[in-house]
Image 1 (tube, helix red, strand yellow):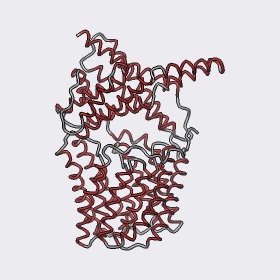
Image 2: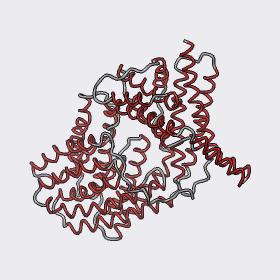
Image 3: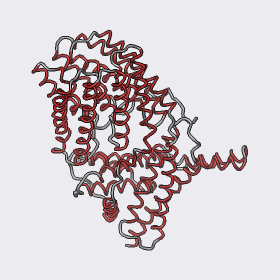
Image 4: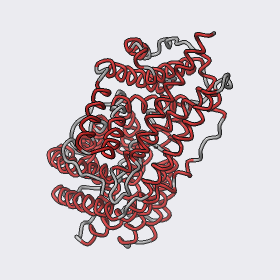
Length: 567
């Protein structure tokens, strides 16, 4: 067993997202008009269906607007499809066991599709929340088309809300991603300059102690570990930020002059990672500051490096469905965990088993360690959230308008807080979900609180036990594939370095491919390290691949500078 189940740090608050207010405001603007219209018509009982479409406004805020338009359309299609399946099932059967089974299968499909397409936060949880709740809503087949039409209409409004900022700041997401890359690179450069000899001194001390105490074999082990220490948190953060910036820029559609200028800045961040000693971090930070607002993008040199971008754009994209195979263990965990949590809730006589189902669905992350952390966060957030609900419910019961306004306030609070830690956002999500049940009519608060607490504990315990029982051996396979990708990318880059005159843009394209492979390898190792009953990872081979890969990246920068000097 490799995984550890931490308690310290699980509830620690992080820094808020730079754009925390965007999803928070967007969801309020997307939810308010449909709900207020239903309030005026006296049909708040239909709010669940408009909420299905409105909550699509939570997605894709970090994507360029062209990519955001496509992503939101797919999210809306997925939302309406799941809602449609749930409503048809609810209209055809009253068997709670059958409905829980359908909900579990839907949750597994939603989890797999969201992970495969990398749709990002909030991922499958919102889709599962809506479809699971709809399974237990009284329904007839004749009502289904009208209810789906409400969801589509609200979803179209949410799409417009999320696309509207593009009229004022058309390159906002790309500018933010580039600024993050520059700031992360600057932080890495500064960390290296603050401790220039730390790694080498640590390596020498470790090697000396190991030679004296444990012999040659242990020395090799310590050497590999000390080599691994070169990959500091600042380095990993910076490489991830740079790759995220490239992903954002390359998914943004037509390459305008503004986008090309941003690409040149990301190239500067890449070079800073390969040659930190020769980089001025203050200049990187100044460029990042200049990207705020709509001012001109700072000019960076070496336009010829963007020839590699043209090569990347010319390559065919990898189809997303190829990622479904490795996700099979996670999908099985989700289906089995949600089903058993729902069945356990039914056995305890709880009237809303979908709460237990959604709790289980929300737990499943990339590995057991992260799943455990999410379970702790979910339980703590829900326990505090029901206390908040108990305090707010007298105000919400003053009238339908007060109920709608309270839900809007919790919508905003959930999105404003969840980026700092999942449990903090859950404090607002829990009372919001409880209040939504009252759109169809008054509910006795004590019973709601009791059922929510029981379902939270049942869903968390059963869901985690299933995660432990269903092992994910494919996490190790991902590491092997990532290692092969890194080694292949490094060999291709080394061959280009050995050529006297590589094809224009080929070396820059190879450098970015190698950097992306290294980021994927690190993500795969971290995911596999948090799994139970995992075969031993090839740690020395991973360290060797990462060390040689980063040395090759640095060599590409030296090669480019030598070419510039010769020219």
